[in-house]
Length: 577
Ligand code: FES
Ligand code: MG
Image (cartoon, rainbow, N blue to C red; front, side, top):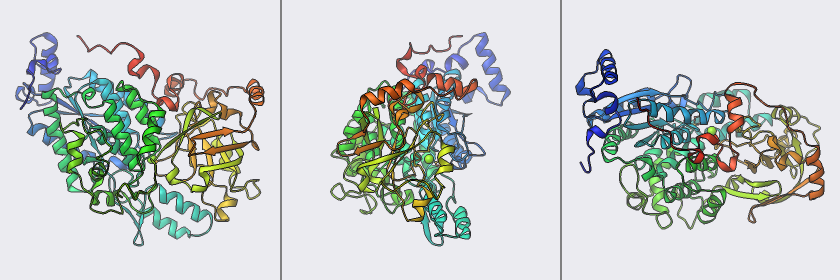
């Protein structure tokens, strides 16, 4: 074992090793639970931060996986301590899990800081859990390794594959248009989610676990292993063994989460056609890691890396299970080996160059060669203009190409309930060339920036066969969604961003190749509308929502709480009692 630290330098030694009154208390209480000195003496204490709950289907296998992680930790001479944390179950939590991402990040950071912990296994996967755990973990600063939940198996309906989210929207529109029956719809409900694991499209979960791995925080290949595959349990044990070594070697996250590592993760995010949500989370994680990263850096990466993973919704055909069999993320690294920075080191002590050299692609249609991409540029582009001075994002590969340069008439909705009601009207004044706008759905206005950004196509047009339109909002959209949706408009309407000033009938011009978004209204007219604008009433007058509204940053800064950002103040002192 190289560079092993003196066990007296372990954090947990201050709780369990020293000879004083408080340590007596800690040891006697460990003994109360059945532990003995052999369990902790000269051993790193490893937290397993577990985001399991009985209502999170994506994490339903975590109690079983914890056994394997625990085994690995014990084999390597560590003491595992499981610490349960907020589960953030994407399908159930209202108004949106995003409202609580920062709460989990705070919880994770303080769980680590307040307990006798030397190293951490972070166990997550469902959308916001990955960034939240990493944000908290990097702020706590102890050696950490991320164990991703793994995608669920492909959905199945009468022998056809079904993709999480994407096929829900698709068949919902088919049902609204009368193309499928109620019985078909009920069968789809039985087949679309049929094993443990997170969404198996290239949604936010698959994107963020890939991002975490490419950043260096998981063992190579970990994020592509389906939850139901035995390789997943083995990866869990390997991660348990490795975190103990990381503590002895003092591999802290600041040594892994460098600017080059973030650039690698963003290149992978672009190449896999990842979720737009990754942009908000990448900015937040980078700021926690003290890495200077802006939307412009992200757009520059997008311009040079094509989408090569043919996984829905950016790709046409395949799902995460196919991706794994085709070589998975290691295959993507191998395709990008001329582009990725080779030097960043991962949790296992290997460089990206070494890892990419081990990767391979076994099915060229699933992970395309760079010269035959799914889309010629990256997954996410950043647009700016008078409607979004601080930027907004779009996923052009998942949109009808004719909308990438378009001028249309705005149809504006101030709230989701208003839009939901109007959109079903058969006499709505709307054509396929109009641009639907939903505002007051941002970080403060949503509240919590819900995934409403794939605004529904008006029923009247759905019946005519329309399946895509240009849509603009200050909301996010699910990574499993698709369509010509412009998202994350900053500043948001609720705090008076220019989106608040648009009126139905105004025209808006989009040009994705120029990266522009322009509201065709004169500056004078906008100034007079601004003078008339009144701030909406606060969403919350007490509780967590109130705290959030006072401190959440805008989408272009990552929607973290200002006081949690690394630059906010001096580092939090270690408990010294
Ligand atoms: Fe958990 Fe999609 S619902 S990842
Ligand atoms: Mg999602």
